[in-house]
Amino acid sequence: MPNKVELISNDLFATVVEKAKSSTRLRANHNFHEFEEVYQRFLNVLTKNTYVQPHKHKSPPKPETFLVIKGELGFFIFNDDGSIKEKYLLSEHGPNFGIDIPPDVWHSIVCLSETCICFEGKSGPYHPSEDKIFADFAPTEADEKRFEYIKKLEGLLK
Image (cartoon, rainbow, N blue to C red; front, side, top):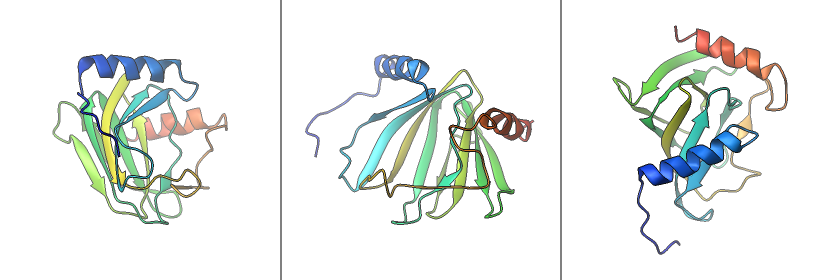
């Protein structure tokens, strides 16, 4: 378990934003936790056109909380067939600042501002091979069709 106090500051934001901008995935995390901890908490920094393939946390079941600190994003909840069940605009300006979802819910996010800084919390521990199940109704992260899919989701929020 970490033994340090860590400030959530503009300096930290700037560091993680730069990391996200230079990442091939156009996003970056800053973890405040160790992977084996039961409560995972981190900054999730997204940049425009990053693609988060719809996924869910089923086994083990993990609820998840997103809070937008800076910027704006679209949050989507899907039915099993890939149709949109719910959609939300989350923004630092409100009226919706965040969302808490139960385990086993298909979801994805789309960054609507140049960068979006979120605080995320979910149950741990984190094991990459078990953390999430990716939806087969959406393009993979490597598929060029992901850009069309992002545009489609963005269009649903207008």
